[in-house]
Length: 240
Image (cartoon, rainbow, N blue to C red; front, side):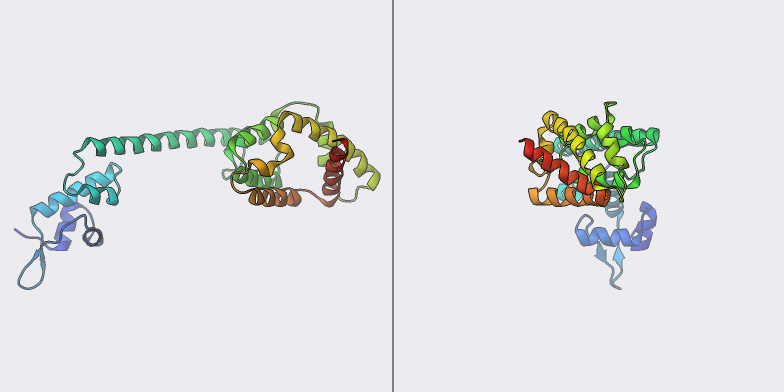
């Protein structure tokens, strides 16, 4: 008994489009044709189609199935490769679930860097934007250092004054805050030397890291804060 393409697809629980795609990429052989030109599929085609469906269901790609030819996954190498891929998938999903749990617990945005979920309280949209850029520019150890600083219940006097600095602050106020901020920055640099030169640890080129981080910081701060930050770094250079 022979079947048409539509009949074969229905028997296998798939679509005509899928059958034709399998022919094009070479995982399903073309059948003989009847004198009228119609394809004539046999049991062997149905068996092959069902085996392809089984293999894709358990995680093999069509490229892998094509490379296997007609072995249908009997080799130890195939089992080993598939098992390793599934293990990696399970680990990835486990990590994602853990990250989602942290974000949910602390009310952090779903699209925010999960690494900073535990310090989400009080962060603004601009804070999250800056941390997102940092996460795409710095290595894991640097991000962990940043999170540690953000989480520590230390004396944040200078940092809090800097955060409250308004656009219309006078020069004397800016200078006073810059002086205290320089001391805070110096302590951070002593603990985490890479902070003195973030571009040196960037995950891409120095130019990329400096451009991305610099732009994110500039957009996060108002004019008075930027001036205070520049003055703070000038104080640091003078001390060195």
